[in-house]
Image (tube, rainbow, N blue to C red):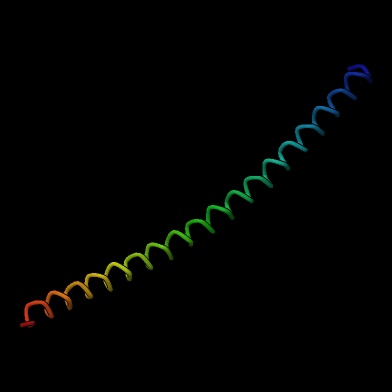
Amino acid sequence: MASDDIKRLESRIDDLISVVEKLRNENNQLYNQHSTLTNRHTRLAEKTKLARERIEAMIGRLKALERSGP
């Protein structure tokens, strides 16, 4: 192989290494973002469930008051 060919190959390899590092960093960021969003979704689902239970309980109490009223 000629010296120029080796230099071009080294340059291509360096470019590929840079791309792999960039993709690895991006993948890590996306993984962390996914974990954060999954945790947030879980917390919101729990809050929604609690809110639904409280509202259903309030409706039940209102209906009981309505039945026991004059």
